[in-house]
Image (tube, rainbow over all chains, first blue to last red; front, side):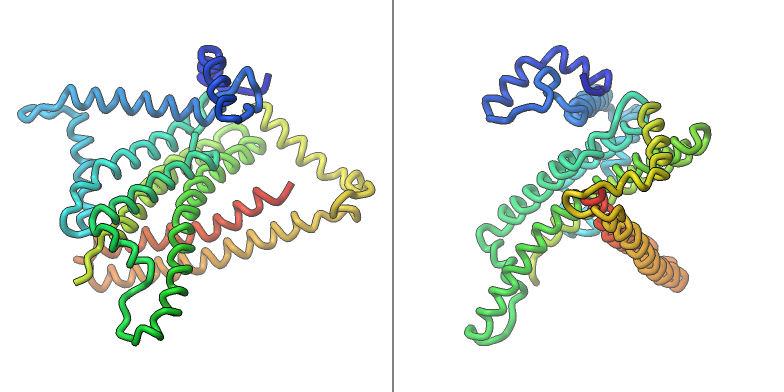
Length: 251
Length: 103
């Protein structure tokens, strides 16, 4: 039996049968058939449950006259994200705030859960940041299509140039290749940035833990907390910038 | 955590057993010299150095802009944080390749 976290062991104990059946129906063979749920998925489920309970708590305590502490915190976060997106995107940016807030809270909770002993950050495996990056990518592409309709595809041909059609065709073909590569590279860079920061933080903490088990790893755990906050902010900020690029209006 | 720290300790001691690597190799390390690891060390140091230079330049420009026009703080702060994170991620790409390729 390989090493599992206690929460993963509980989930595998309860759900191993159905999950293995589901995976085999999709022709995926789990590595350990009696423990098909890996640590990262179990931690993601935990983060999801924690966030749902937190949001339900906030929702039940909303009040206009006597806002509590939780309401203040969430109003602060909402105002921050909305102000940020207004600054970057411009007009009608309020519709994007729910997605950005959800993304931000999920990534923040996933990163911070790695500090607690007995849990590990799901963002320290490459699959979870990839999932977040794919969500962000699909979101800003669909928002672009919703905003400008099928003419959104003209974005991929580069800026409009005052040249005769014969000269524009090769330039447009070149720009199409470059734009497709750059859009795919955005997903790659979002994934690798988040994954490498979290994974490197874990590695550095482990290395120093093996050298000096007392005192020094605390510094690196503090660094991990700071890096978690910063990387969440950067992920949300870059998604906002990509949204701005997708829904921008030429004057 | 304890098991992993013991593993790291043992690995660092095993690095003294360099002659053991000189067994007839399958793919590349037949001479006993792990060129991939050496190249990984140099490339990571190079990437981190250049990243540090670029981030220093970005921070210096942001500090100077802030000194000239303190009222533009939100915009300058935004540009600084965004720029630093993007530069940092370039050094992280090197780190990821090292994790993928160095055994």
